Image 1 (cartoon, rainbow, N blue to C red):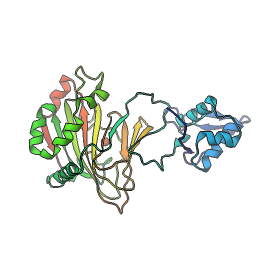
Image 2 (cartoon, rainbow, N blue to C red; image 1 turned 90 degrees about the horizontal axis):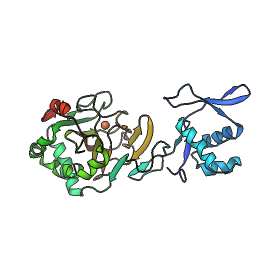
Image 3 (cartoon, rainbow, N blue to C red; image 1 turned 30 degrees about the vertical axis):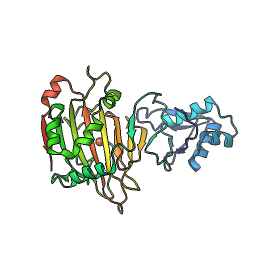
Length: 310
Ligand SMILES: [Fe+2]
């Protein structure tokens, strides 16, 4: 991934150790907590520069009087990998922003975004369908992660899709988009021979003002299996907060700035969460579908069609 034009900043206060005549700090990467990073005086000066404000690496190299080259980039990679530096995303407002992540390779599909996937009147029909369904109550998803949110859910197999659409006709344009075989192909390769999802967990998610969700991995169908992909249609969004963060394990990889009519598909094993909306804003409304490629044994345990309400 290209580092140029990205800004990084020191993540919170940092304690430096002086030991055996050298400077060091503990890694903040949870997978290598005992790792001690030794710093020379230039590296310490680089960190000091990043502690002042978000800056581009090339700027910092110039400020400390060293050449901005591949060695300097490796230093930044190391500091990012050990969670000492993080990319600054305060000003990023594009629909999807792929965060700087040395672990993500070119061509890896993290997330697909269709900014204007559905027309305004269809978006309004779907929002209206949810609100007037009579099913919206306390969100049936994990109360800890989704505390304060509302909604309802439907578990279903692909062969029950027509029945579901008869019950909720306003979902038709949504399913036409998200169940397109080209979308599944990007995420399901290698999971099953036909690489097409065969079971789904649909969730209408209503986030009241001042709420969000905690970081989590979706496994709503049986509590264990992760979906191949998750598809989200945004119906009503807020100007501040309500951003979707995507992380690979605990590594931040992407940021979604939702807009009405936008559809986002992301890899089903990604950890994700929604930042809190402002308490003075409006409701944030989305329709989420976890798409699963289940084997014969697991599909047998999945209900054909089940409405989940609280
Ligand atoms: Fe989720």
